[in-house]
Length: 246
Length: 246
Image 1 (tube, rainbow over the protein chains, first blue to last red):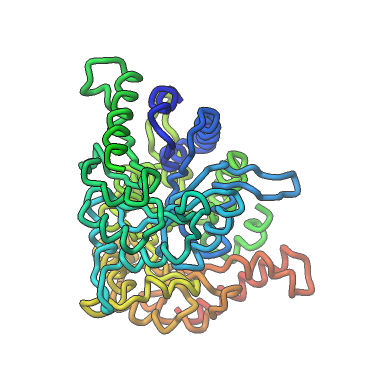
Image 2: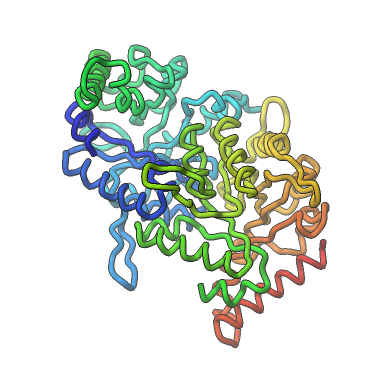
């Protein structure tokens, strides 16, 4: 929460990684709910980095977990109340649909993994298909088809996680998904650079959402100032770089 | 827990679907921990149906959540203590590795999604690759390469989730993954039939793990007896069918 308070003013969203909370058991889930509430109190959007994906009935339950809206015999379960969730598309369109429907009801969004930022992403995302193109291009097509553009922003409610470690992909991604907001992990600790992200911002500043976690949280390790100050300075530096592109 | 008590004696494992607990927030996580403890007390294996998949650092945290073993400044966090977890392979080998390593340390196992049981599985798992074969066959190769066979059972510690709704796949799956235990969802409510699963049991009875949830939990809807009795009878019927094949 200290990190949210320090870096928050230079950010538009926080992206809690659910794994880091789940490994603490139910106290971790309590901490997750508190972190989400704190971020929303600060006026930040919350992207639940959950990378969930399951068959339709389970997908429905997962979207209830992140967005909320489950009625139980003991009253309504509020869910996390996230503004968006990351979603794994491997199980196909019928597994994606409940997340998109749940997001629409909640006025929220979904970011589908189109091509992640890790080295192993090449194993499956990058395989060449018999019909031409790579698997991630097929996924990008599903994302473009699933989203509905908003009336004011023109951006769709189904976005894409596009690893920033292979910037050469971004122009093609924007071609395949003209209206999708891009969530761009891999900046900083994973080696990606904001300067390479211009295609993501083609529809305007809100078209790209640069995600940097370790480079902000650990900024004090290389800075000559207090951790909170270092985190905020790094977040502001990244924002300036990104907005200079948009 | 009543269901575990009723059907447990006819089963070898329970497979809690984490989505159903997560949507209840932290009380749901408390209930999950209690359910896992109860199942283990009954001598049942626990397969955490989590379908997690993330880049290496997050994958490490997820495996700590399901298997345990995280040291914190406030003491060790026990984790769920599951015997196995379902794993989504889309992010590639470096995302799979922390789960396999964590499972080995815990004396547990991993079931990788090779081809799921839902209709939408055809969208990505079944796409034809430029090098020949389908995406699920490529995933099956990763699974076979990742596992190490146990000295007594001969079965590997990395298994495969193989949807039982397309039994025509099973013989090819067994060919590609000769030592992998197969977790076979899709029996019952999703339309799969135990009689079609013979290739899964090729290495012996333990080679196939038939997963039936709704058909056991909802057996009383079509039976002329109490819910507990109906659940147990359906579990016993499925077991007899499966063991007649092995």
